[in-house]
Each structure stands twice: as structure tokens, then as C-alpha cells.
Image (tube, rainbow, N blue to C red; front, side, top):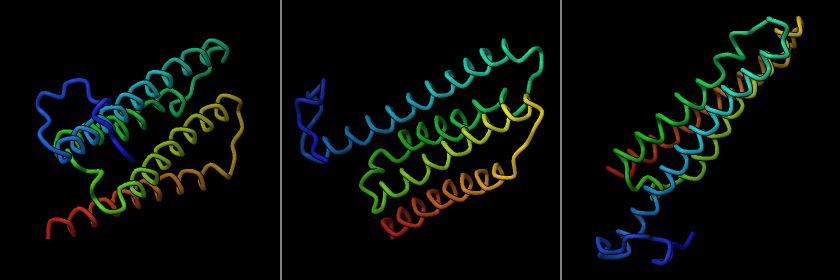
Length: 154
């Protein structure tokens, strides 16, 4: 991915291409954190709207589904932005990014579906597979990131 200097609003502190790459990595982490915040807010809104039509029946899975993108998405990417400003230079960063985000998405959707099914008074055996896959992708992404980050430091 190429970053042009026209993409940078304040170029006064940019000295070389390394600074441009750092700026890009910071911008990507901030953007990802902002998207996770927006998804968390949308999850809260979806829960409130669904509760209006749920005839007074609620579900903990549906009510708490916003925690997956908030704690699992917003917090890690804010920490990544603060403590690892050039994280996208780590080998296999895209693999980590895609696995991790897919895992958080799977866990969020599983929580929503579980809530919908609980409110409807039924269940599904397939939700356990979705939960397992979500956690597997999330943990795999974390392992890949830390293994490659440690390899880079050694």
C-alpha cells in the first residue's frame, strides 16, 4: 500500500519515508479503533430497537454483544496505536489483522444470533461452532502478531 504525502494533513513534522509509514500505521490503528467504537454503538442501538419489539423479553447475549467490539476491538487497537506505532511493518500483519477482526466479527454475530434465538425461545447447535471459530481466529491472530513481533525484535 502506497501512502502519498498528500494523504498527510500536517507535513511539518515529517522528515523521511519512515515518518510517512509511521503516520500511516497510526492512522490505520486509529481508524480501526473508530470503526470498532461505531460498531459497539450500533450493537447497543440494535439491542434497544430489538427490545422494543421483543414484548418485554430480553437476552443477556443480545444486551452484552457490544462488549466484543468494544473490549475486543477498540481497546486492543488503541493499545496497538499507542505502544506499537509501526505495527503494520511486522511480518504477517495483514494476516493478524484479518484473522483477529474476523474472530471479533464472528463472536459479535454469534452473540446477536444467540440473543435472537433466546428471545424467540429456541436454540441452535451451530452457535457453538461459531463461538469456537471466533475464538480460534482471534487467538490465532494474536499468536501470529506476537510471534512475528518478537522475531522482529530478536
